[in-house]
Image (cartoon, rainbow, N blue to C red; front, side):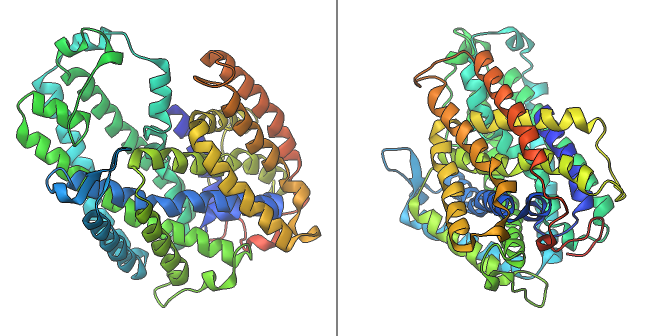
Length: 468
């Protein structure tokens, strides 16, 4: 939560300055030119475009607890059956249709689902805490440090807490983005963190103490709906278990709808800035980037055919999204130098200290995604970037201002290959984090100092304006 809040504070200042749709595609372009803009924007889009398919996959997998014919075990984990893939595809098309109506229609659907997403977890937490408060569980040891780091990355904790950035990418359709974007980011993250902490506390207190005789590391819980469902069933709360499974089916729908719109707007902004083909910049009468939205839905449909499990996909998406967010502290420092007199509705205090710290934390988060995720995510980011340089090479892509990206991502990927359990050098966690911190603090000033002398005109935004 502290990591996510610090990164969010950085983007609160940036979001108030760059109040346009698809802002994550604008910020690196604005400060460091077209090479950095393509890499940062492509990483953001790559993470976003997979999210609707992942959330729909989760929805149908949880629904499979009541309708077993929607899922099947292919030997490498639970996946979707042909019927499940068909239902997931229909859901993606339905969410695309809602997005086509514009952000106002999208907000009406999400508002109703959000009330559900808030009340159900809070209610479940209170029932478990009041019904079985085994406070002695908090004194039980036997947990594993590696398990905690896996939970942060591939387990979905960072994946869940990084949703604040959606407010930036829909900012161009807000009435008062300079005020509303920082508020939405801060309040949204605070509410999410509160709910997750309460759910975590409820789980810790609700586990029957006999199951912890050998410590948390040996805890075994099996249920189709996850550990909370297993605990509820073990306590005889079948109604609560049913509610949890229903929530697991309903809640991802709002996330899928929101990120489908976000992915389309990042794609649209990349096209407007001439980083992607021009047809993706087309918008319909409702102001929705319809071609970019259609591409997002189509890619989601293709991803569903591959049938990856939700857990495996989360590591890749988290890596891509944190990579795109790593640009934030660098661009904030650069903007302080490039546009020092522009009024800032929110100004990050002690930015000289907090920006490098945020960059170090983002570096840790990328590394924690592990070799398995990074060996897929980094090539999918850098290889298209090399293709972009080959097609659009020359002085117009400001390669020198974005070359640090290749050093940075190559260094983290190399470290993930070398260090960790089962890798050539099994350093302890402290040594790994120290080496990564030194690497990040060496890259940070290099990246900041490589900013353009003036803001890039290709970004199509005036700082502090409310234009999309």
